[in-house]
Image (cartoon, rainbow, N blue to C red; front, side, top):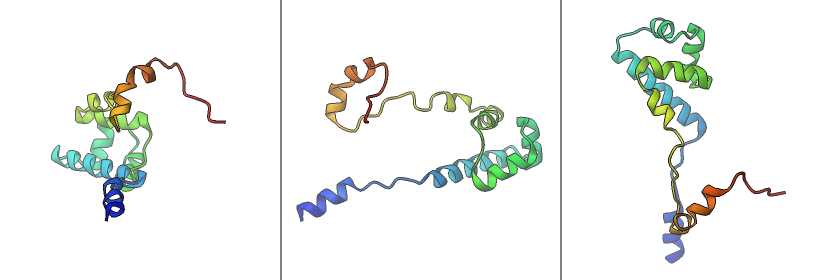
Length: 111
């Protein structure tokens, strides 16, 4: 029973990269529709080629530069500016050792 409980606690529902991409594309599409813009109209406002934008809504694939342009049209660049800005701790030991991690200049070699 204890083993079952531990396995259940450690199970996380993590989205795949494809799921994340498609989720972002879907939310952008919803915001575009709220603005009552066509794909062509939105891509023109974002200064992104129409085929590039159309592919983004379909596959979720786009360059970071173009994603920033999309965020600018939606007034959401601050959301991208803050990505990865906060350290997320997994356990109390990481909190205790946080100063040691921050002071490192580069990662450790694992070779």
